[in-house]
Amino acid sequence: MKRFFQPIAKEGPSKKPAVSTADTASPCPGGGGGGGDEEEKREAPMRFLTWNANSLLLRAKNNWPEVSRLVQSLDPHVICFQEVRMPAAGSKGAPKNPNELKDDTSSSREEKQLLMHALSNPPFGEYRVWWSLSDSKYAGTALLVKKQLRPKKISFSLDGAASKHEPDGRVILAEFDSCFLLNTYAPNNGWKEEENSFKRRRKWDKRILEFVLQIEKPLIWCGDLNVSHQEIDVSHPEFFSNAKLNGYIPPNREDCGQPGFTLSERKRFDNILTQGKLVDAYRVLHNEKDTERGFSWSGNPIGKYRGKRMRIDYFIVSEKLKDRIVACEMHGRGIELEGFCGSDHCPVSLVLSEET
Image (cartoon, rainbow, N blue to C red; front, side, top):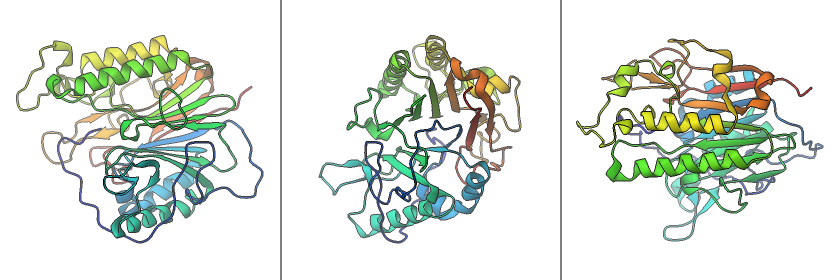
């Protein structure tokens, strides 16, 4: 979720380079460990982890032992990151390559090496890595897949075009034999119609709906979806419904309130789930409000957003997969951000049973 209350800390240099990834099922050499000589299988993944890291570089510098312990304990087949905040390769003024981490300056080479070193150490060395990056340290996504689980295809846009990336690197789509895995970082709705953020979010929601209606395999859709579906998904519904930025009130009543909790966003999200025959995996198993562990984003522990929390990070799955949901958990708790691993979002996991 867009941080509207606190600037991101400035990221300093680290060490030297490594590599990133391509737009097919085979990543570029060095993408978090690359491929080995072991026989590759096209099995369907069953354990998943999604997390808005709010700068993967900062997490690698400051929180990596905690992140590594979580991954070690959960042993996910697939890890989806959002807000990696690493710039795409390409010198100033030149075309950018959103599959590759920037390394054309001494500082970017050091930052790339530090991050790739973190991703090559256990348990991350067991994964291949694909990137979809913005031109600057903004947004961006990453996909990590266990080496023994080889996707049939990786693409980076909602229309499935192999070489095209969504603006700001907001999409990675993996096709497996039996399902699609969609990792998204949804654009924030913003506060004001005249800033075009409302229009951008409406267009995004329309394209997501079109995507879920045309896919022919079961879908697992995860990431920071930047919307809280129902009142049960926020800690303080009245606070979020009445939230304003500098006293501004949008002309349309349904656009009023906290970005991510406006009535218009929630209606569109509900429509995507209904028409797409999708279910919220967490709510399948947890149908009551959990004030301790029931939210994935938390406001600044200092100021008016202290204790104000939202569930905006999801696993959404096709109804066909509903009976296979074994677990869907948020791994953060409380207003002091325990388990958030340095981010303002906590990791969320999903476990499916084997196909019968």
